[in-house]
Length: 123
Image 1 (tube, rainbow, N blue to C red):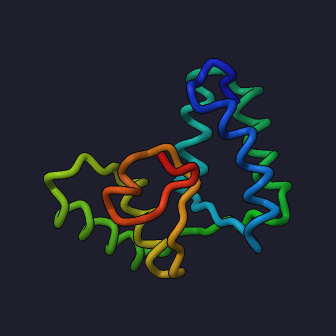
Image 2: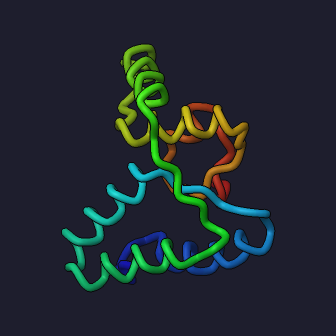
């Protein structure tokens, strides 16, 4: 949403390709919440709300609501990898991906590579 973001152009180029390439995409409620907050703080309510609607209205994007057992697994990830600066949202994403046997992550966050996932775009 932020045209000044260094990953903006790549994101807008890659996302439509992912929609075509993959049967479906998933996003957790934690990632949505974090994204909304970051966009709201940087660009305001209108941009954040536009982002939420883009995600919510895309039939190929499944929204996942994190149950307690996966949050407990995320806490275990944070404890086990105390030497890494993973966020709670990172850890929740990791356990969701493991549970669903997802290997690829549309993310510019190096933590996904550190944890063993393939980031798209790869760099």
